[in-house]
Image (cartoon, rainbow, N blue to C red; front, side):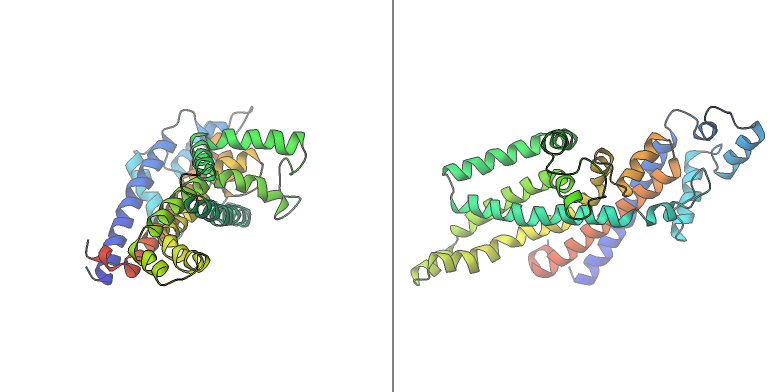
Length: 310
């Protein structure tokens, strides 16, 4: 398959997945129990005519599929919707993105540096104690839920030992972001380390490495130049995909560490039954994830012709 055909196929898949996932999110959010319009008044109920006007304005009395079409029409025109209090969802997110992007990129950098280094270290020591320690550590890291890791790290490293700020971004980067980023990177870091380890072991047993040894190249030169470069190709793919995953994964971490990012905004919107905000943020995160995956697939196919013909 030619590259143009592959790109066209990915675009069609991207649109279909986006429509399907966004409709499910829309239906689930607006099916939640409780009346978000009535909740706007707090302890003082809103007048009946105001409630009726807001319901009509947000199409809450119409079927879910029709509400979705109204919303989708707005998205196609660049409008992510309006909150029940009349604010633009895009405007609410605008000041939050720097925190979320900083957190996600810090976590991604930890994945790259620590994950690749651990995988390389374990792969070069296959079967030894260091290899077993890394494998056990990665299994532990992937088996513990992220919120358990975050709350435990916050309690021990921030509250008791005082090594990191407990919450907020007052301390600036990197102090305020390091611990939350480490928590959010834990799962991806373990996956990268295991993938890098396996790739290094496969490369070390390949024919071209045997040929290099037979030619008399020094072990450090073989590993530093040839093994690392060839082993990193599959790892780069998963690292690229993880950018979108990390952005979506900030929801829990920003809530726990009180970081004023998009994830915390989504966290607060879910608790307040603020449907338009939840759907708007979720949609944007889905788009980032799908586009990232599509770009990785296309880039991978350009590097490896076997994928284009699969």
